[in-house]
Length: 207
Image (cartoon, rainbow, N blue to C red):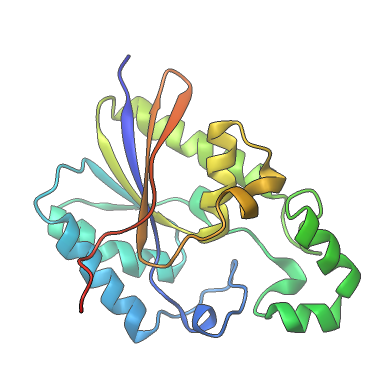
């Protein structure tokens, strides 16, 4: 069976993440730390066997991916199927602010974050299916290849549930933390997926 490996990188830290605010479709700027994480990804990618680089169109993902694409001498492909979930009325808010603005909906979201997604947002199941469609298309075009994608926290976690046959309402429990500037590796082949690594640092730890 021919498989394709995907290196799923979460973009660098943004000003909203530093403040614990939900960043979905809003185009939020990277912090200085986030820009440094992007450069570290470029240094990590240099010289590795990677056949293509894909990114969400949002600038926080694109700017994180650009140093890696340059280091590899590859074109950066942007695809809207890698966009973050739309958090609707929760966009830009902290959990405490949501608790004040719409406490009942938030309580349901905490228990079942996909079935009872944030009011005004998109259906995470649809987003996961679209992202899986993209990965399947890439895998068909790069059999045996290694692909780097740079996208988003919630999207990646519901996508992993879609790929691995996990109830998407469990994504916050099964995949509780996906840090900025980390990579997750999966292998896709013959309609099946395997998780190789999750939430791993791509830069050496500095002491």
